[in-house]
Amino acid sequence: MANSKRQLFLKRRLRVRNKLRKVNAGRIRLSVHRSNKNISAQLIDDVSGRTLAAASSLEKGLGIFGKNNLDASAKVGTALAERGKAAGVEDCYFDRGGFLFHGGVKALADAAREGGLKF
Image (tube, rainbow, N blue to C red; front, side, top):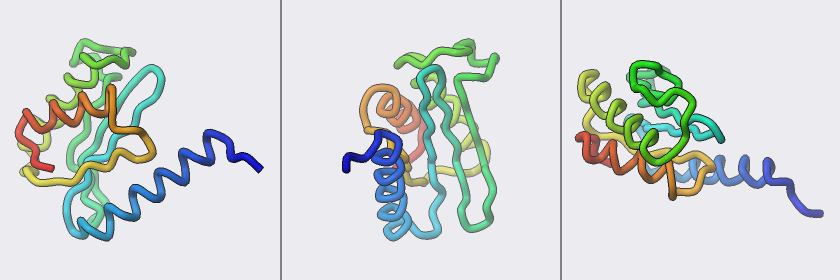
């Protein structure tokens, strides 16, 4: 029986996260969520269960409200890098979830790297 797209996405997300947790225990996680209309990212400390910094295309201050394109993703990545550095985060690992590493997810990652986050 064929799996639905949602089931395949959930399996891929669990596979990616479990592999990353084994290798990067104790490090800050940069988690990305992408929808058809928006993209958001968070720097999460899994040890204490706290979000240290977050950025989203839903924020009106970034001027990209309701857009999910490469420019919006790059602005979110830059904003997240600035907020992360202000929170004292320089080293993290990239958790793409079940999303493929291309398009908006890749643009966000590249902008975060240029902003000073190391992963």
